[in-house]
Length: 283
Image 1 (cartoon, rainbow, N blue to C red):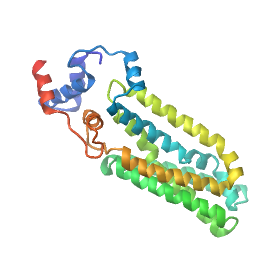
Image 2: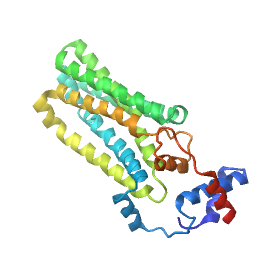
Image 3: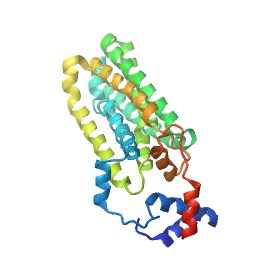
């Protein structure tokens, strides 16, 4: 965007020894960045495009902001922040037991985030999102049943701990980290900073609403009832992943952009080879 093409070429040469491939890759980046006509990048133009988006950009915004909001409205922060309250409702009385159960939740979250790091480029984003959202839905529904029907018993306590840790594990191996990866991949260069910021705002606002309303809602419809609501929202997130989230594993940023522009988020897309060749010939 700053027209520092020679410096960009040197960076690419550090990561790729094939000079021809470097030139082809550089041409793709220039094409995506809008250097064909040497147009000047303006921040005001970016916000105009985000506020009045084309169909392709609209699909990007729905995917990026939607996955960020679903990450939070499924209740993960409420589960983590208020896990002592949940465990008390399940029947745990002693402070030592409450502390041990809460530590188990934090430990589970850390371990499964590390697992996600190892799997995200091997398995792919979308399979992990399916596993994550379906697993969270199951655990949240199970937690609602446990707190509603089996509270204050040893079986209920064990199931509550299992469901909470399971929900955190499924979140951490999928939608938790992957939503940040997706928002850094799906937006074109000219829009990436501002569009990613919009997604982050949606995530933080959703998190605040859930965290601040959890205790009030749980008093109105019980803690178990609140988790039935979270389970229903999590079920919607499964449908959202299926309909709106493309698989971005192994695709360049430019290919991902073309997937949304061509309205083929499920099948994927390729940059037009002739456009790339033309750009290389005009350099």
